[in-house]
Image 1 (cartoon, one colour):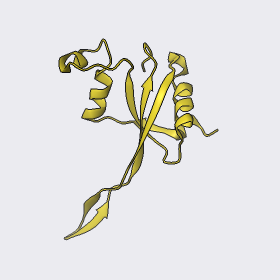
Image 2 (tube, rainbow, N blue to C red):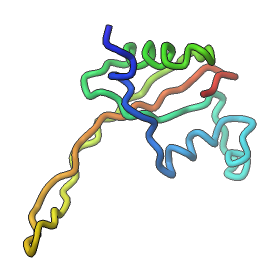
Image 3 (tube, one colour):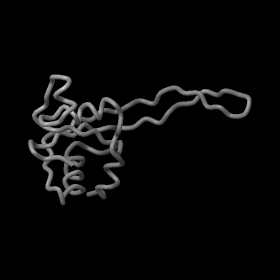
Image 4 (cartoon, rainbow, N blue to C red):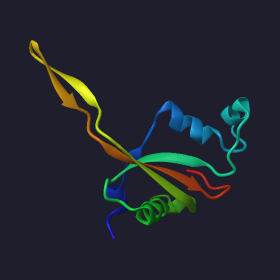
Length: 112
């Protein structure tokens, strides 16, 4: 098995990801919106070759001190987006790097 820190690269922080975290029951932001999730969800950037069971085992190993249990894992491969690269006086076309993100649902009462 790969090192869990090679599988899970980092926590993905965007407005949508923070809203997903806030929709679990008992949090303040979810109550304002009126929609709830029974299980907390967190978004991570993962290795592009990682499978769903490998992601789940890696997260349980990383957060073993908090004794979290993964309920489900959903993955999305984000394609590279076109971008401008400014070099001197010329604008060149380039691309952002693509990545794979995982939306991880934990069991009720478990959180990181």
